[in-house]
Amino acid sequence: MKNLQIALAAIVAFVAATASAFAGNASLVMDARSGRILSSENADELNYPASLTKMMTLYLTFEALHRGEISWQTRVPMSKEAARKPPTKLGLKPGDAITVEEAVYGMIIHSANDAAAAMAEKLGGSEAAFAQMMTAKARRLGMTRTVFVNASGLPASQQVTTARDMARLGIALIRDFPREYRLFSAQSFNFRGRVIRGHNKLMYRYDGMDGIKTGYTNASGFNLVSAVSDGNRRVIGVVLGGRTAKSRDNKMAALLDQHLGRATAPADGPTIAAAKPLDTAQVASLPGVSLYAEPNRAGKNASAALMAASPAAVVPADRPTAIVEFASTETEAGAYWQIQISTAASADAARKILVEAQSAGGAALLGASPHTEVDGSGSTKRYRARFIGFASREAAASACSILKKRSYDCRLLPGRS
Image (cartoon, rainbow, N blue to C red):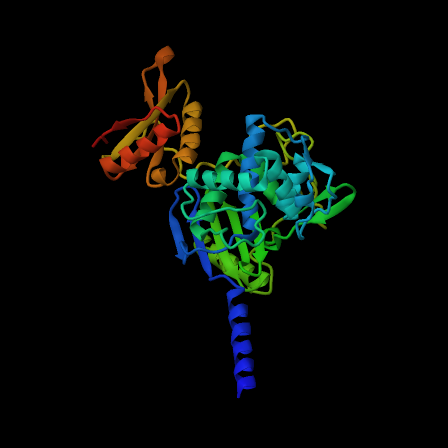
């Protein structure tokens, strides 16, 4: 009898362990331009991010590049701690070094854990300190339930996120770093004489998809954040806790099909029209950075997600907009409360200020719309940078309070009828 009880206990423990190896299913589809949620399932339930974590590591890397703290050719030392990270990794030895360029490609295409850890140590002094920077940035981006404890997404019980937070991070990457975001379209890259291929198979066959990141651990299940540009629309999809990579990809494709008005393709066949494979392309404004991809049998050019323009070009041909479309300067503000944070000499300068403020304001600005308005004429013409559409004075005042803490000069204004 005792042996039977032991055997039953072992079976129960095995079943429980197997069940707990997979996260709960969660998904979310968001219109990236309006911020409107198109569908959601358990979108605010905590799950493990796995390698989706590297999206934040890359966000902070791009931020450091823009601040001039590092360059694409800056050397990143590989410490013993970074080198001993389990696969997937680039496989460098302690004492070796990679460039920022190689680290970025390693994270995006190969999901390299050693590259993520080395980059964290370079920017934060230690991976633990960098993880604190990651969590702080998550809060500023409106990711209210995400906590990071490492830079790679390797298993850690305290490292959690939600589908909603991952959608916000995806939008932030597109909005704040539109040129660097193009790197997420790469299928493979040449690392010191060997071609390393990527993991995001759905992106290579789903029309209009230009990123963004896969992730997997036993605890997380199969995760995916995807971005699709379809005409004037851009949609962000998140699927967490898939049982297999195939089922995760099929679920993502079905969700996107539904909200893009497409017919769902057979689960085992190509999804919609197969995306054009990418030829080698030079990315504008990223000196020395080349994308390597499988050549198309028909010899067709790269998809629109990658720049086919000359290396001298600076502005992407399909620059993603901010989370919401900017109202035109002729649009009258509604009867809701609004805030003004600055004035600028041009509409473009005002919009840039609003994009930066939207990142700083995080969740407090999710219900508001960026708005530029002309004041004066001729040489005295100025463009007011405002957020409009707050439902109450309290909501507008709260947003102002947060922006003031981020060094913005915020002024509360009533709406106009």
